[in-house]
Length: 238
Image 1 (cartoon, rainbow, N blue to C red):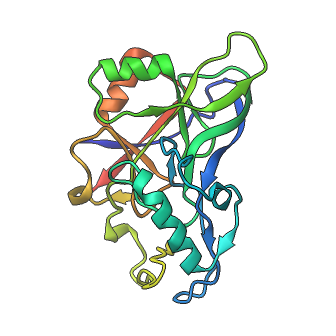
Image 2: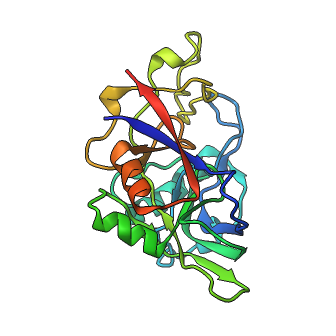
């Protein structure tokens, strides 16, 4: 099965723009006692998560870095609300996107390379074609224009890894305390075929969570249905 990386189509001609953030999030880690680094990132998002039952919601509303013990405490509060297969990392973002949008949108829209929005009609067409594990989540994005689209955020779970052959041979091991994977995305990404899921047509890599991957089935369905707004780049695997 051929796989492809999904990225924003910068030649689509659409004028759409979105200024939004997720309602909640985990903090980054401040000076990990293992690797001594302060770090976090927003490449993992779970828009289906509803944290309203959590008593101390304010702990999830401000982007910041915390000592690892506080980060781990907050992870345990979030864990019961996660979708199956979700993985938490410092800076994980949760809940619906909240903000404003304007302009003309294609079938898909990528705010960042790791957030993928889809118009409801396009998602329903893909689901009707039998595409597997496609979950669209509501957003709280407001438009100040007529005939605005209904944008959903795709919840894309981490599955699969890059092949070791495309990674630096002298790379450092994962931090034993915070499990940071401190490797830059390689210019020539190679997928590890033995780790790729066989039960879904859309996923993100576990080790490079900013990379969204789809199957050839997904690409073919988008082409047949005339869905646009993103570009597909083939990925080699081994």
